[in-house]
Length: 82
Image 1 (cartoon, rainbow, N blue to C red):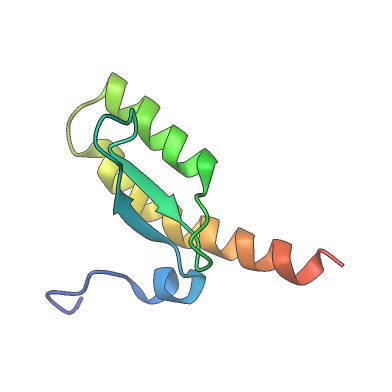
Image 2: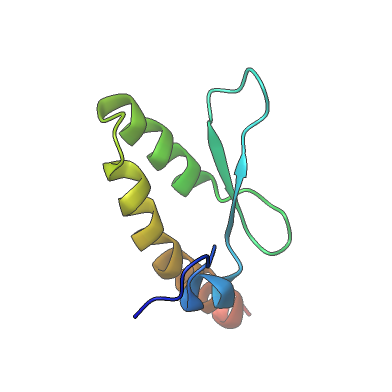
């Protein structure tokens, strides 16, 4: 059973990706940032485009499922980028 009140899942915390609100007047309602505070553009753009097509909760749910995978890919990219 999932603990109530958790903001980040176990794997999201390992990847370090966070959702932050976009600046006022920006076309991005949320921006995904990595542990260094740099934006992860492809996730932010994907979310923006999905919200245009489907303003409901489906893009939010899909984003929650994508965050652990994207965090894993970013960690692997940093490890093998020598």
